Amino acid sequence: MTGFWRHWAISAFALAVTAWLVPGVRVDGMFALLIAAVVLGFLNAVIKPVFVILTLPATILTLGIFYFILNGIFFGLAAAVVPGFGLAGFGSAILGAFIMGFVSNIVGGFFPEAKQGEG
Image (cartoon, rainbow, N blue to C red; front, side, top):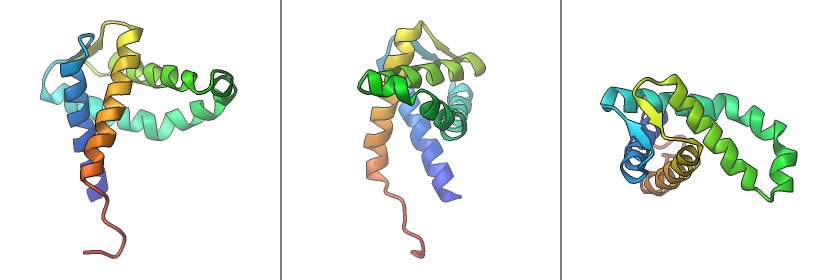
């Protein structure tokens, strides 16, 4: 369960950095930030894998570029669902998803997961 909290905190931090860096991404307060991190985590863990498989031909034909569009779609979907989390447009969604993923990977690298069996 500790991994969930760690991932949630990293996602919330990455979203805060994204909102600070990308002019078209808006998060109104800490509550919206935390809820948006949960919604993004849910969408990316449960629904997105199905869409990745369904859109695999488009991703292959575009040499992977369509995957950025898919990330933007899910980032925009989270913004549509969470009050207080907004986007200026689809370009902001794509750039926001890219920046959030980048920041999340960088920060997550500083906090590696503990192996099973270690205290």
